[in-house]
Length: 95
Image (cartoon, rainbow, N blue to C red):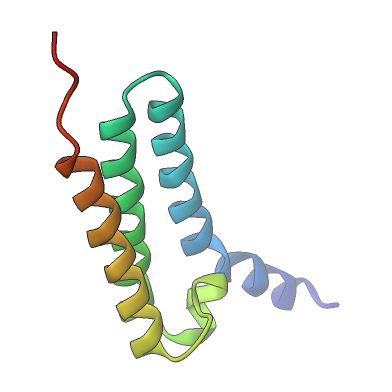
């Protein structure tokens, strides 16, 4: 495989990697006891995924591209709203 093709394939996964790193940061926050912040961070990652899928052409969206653009964006936005909503709706513990 020529190096240019390999480089293009790797660069196509950069948006997916960016979203994955934000999700990982959210999981770390949750693991260290900041689960509300972790959920909001994971929700922000889903919103980022939706934005990247909306703005990038399919060949540049990499693994963020699963179905049609409209379906992918709607799914990511729905997940973002749901995760952030759950994180913000649960009351903090008393004390």
